[in-house]
Image (tube, rainbow, N blue to C red; front, top):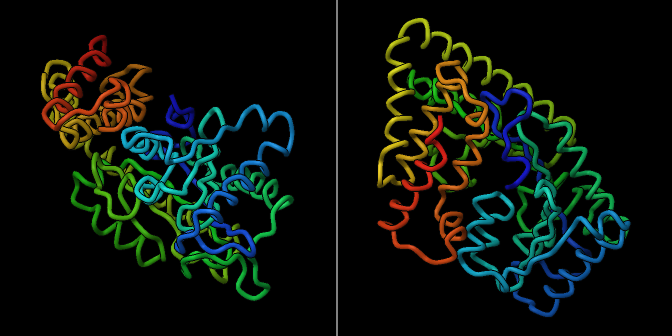
Length: 343
């Protein structure tokens, strides 16, 4: 299982993960948005070689997969594990991904840009993921010439990524804000502060299971450190609000919260058919109950692993075959019963 999904990082009760993504392009090559199969293949080889030639440890730790060599199910599973973006999965003819064994250092190749470096860690660890991303960025830049302008910074296929080329984000679990009806106000606050708010899988995805991804929108005219500091500050504000509301729930509705937790667990331990939306909602309820001490079980601290396992791509990959919606719901119910039976 992907290491960063163990959800054992700082502020794990509210912060699922921290991520830094850096957009880079190689000088004298067309952006991937321009169809150039031969050039795209050269970019893949150049990026991969820049990684594995750095030292013996990286040579052993990193591997590469071309999108065209993967099935649709395998690509979908990689999206669900946040190894690749939905865009790379869809436009897979000349794309590739290079990643380490723990799957927390990832380089997408020929997505919207030639290079998308990603560093992921559980919990709130923005400074650490920035450090990790910068280390990989330095390794590649020592061996390849980036498209860079003294005035505008790193050049990108999308103007919004020009500058530092960096997007920092945190994945938050905010059930109390949702239950109190205050989530929309918090999202508006984040937008006013210059942050984008998206679902679990980025732009266009739903806010399923009370999961919200917030990230910076501006990359030009600000430093990497300024982006991290601002996101950290706003994230801490959201964490404090969520925790305060959770305390209020326990104080004002103790029986209702306890009932919601045990009812959700009971359904998942006995139901034969579970849709993805219902499964994530019920797991969110259990995760909240675990953070409040209503259910005490170490395995529930890793519930985001289970959330990933019940996604369509991961379910189909585990079984090695395509499933229709009905069979997906049945297999999801089976998996959840097996994983939660002793809790």
